[in-house]
Image (cartoon, rainbow, N blue to C red):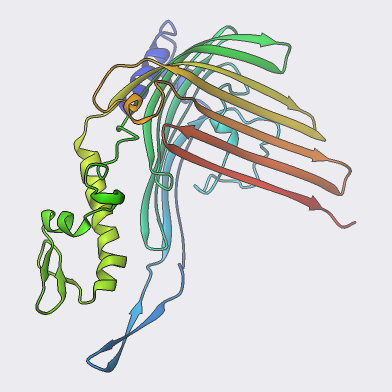
Amino acid sequence: MRYAIALTLLALTFSANGQDFYNKVLRRATFYAAANGGNSISDQSIYSLSSGSLATDVLETPFDYSLTLGIRKIARFGYENRANVFYDGTENTYGDAATVGKRNGLEFLAEADWRRQQGRNFLDQDYFVRYVDEWWLVKAEWLQDGFADIRYFESSQRLRARIGDKLSLNAGIVQRISEPYGYNPLSGLTIGDDQLHYTALALQEGYTIDVNTGEFFDPNGALVANDPAVWEQVVVPQMLNDYVSKKRSELPDQWVHSLVVGYDFYHYSKDFWLHSWGNMMPYHVNTNGEYSYHNFVNSSQWVDYSLGIIFGVKFNKSFGIFLEGKYNKYWDREWHDFSVGLNYILI
């Protein structure tokens, strides 16, 4: 899917009547690579009793880090005054998510971020290319957000209507490819009162239980618990997580074809700026697939949408407020981030 973005970029490039690739695409783009790190949460002592004797273990969490690699060519909006000389991989540029950039033409972003936080590993990726004209726009994007557990490819083709210099409306079609969100591998494994027979599932997945000693072993034969409470509270949740991940990965990706309508609004002055955009997908073609999302909702249709806003006011030379954020709801996934606050300069 990410290769489709690359092919789209190349097609747009070489359609320019033989103009030089560098001047047309790469000129003024920024390539960046960065590593950031720091200590995680402090070590924790864990106490337990074994045959009446006190045992102490130390839970160590490895240091946090992020490795970022990317290239971008996106015109900065008026409110995006860079504070740093270099891109260091920690930037959170909300305006990148807007449907329409500051200028018409070709823009693109390719960024991968390998991250470890509090001992957990995440991979965030965002690859997109868009071309905006006065009356139409196209965009293709591959997005993976490790924290939100969302990953999909999306392409859209839209007509665009400008209303004045600040507002534009758009409508068209969008195609998405993703894993079968909504599918729950555990839904068919419940017994009475929706109770999950997790012990039977654990045995099916290769775990073993020694009823004489009360010990529990993983599929590799390693001891994972010697107490039912530890088994239920620690091992079983991890077993269920592994099972769900395995079953989800075994299923084919799903196509979703939808209608989309959206807007972009941008106003900027030195003392007041407002940038907002939104996209709504109210109708989706039912492909009657076994794992189509239509099968996992109460109605045959649902609404997916995304919103973004960047707002700032400087009341005088000393005092100003700001609000920045974006919110996304696709299928059964929601992910968002925001920043809000005030600045007061003492003079």
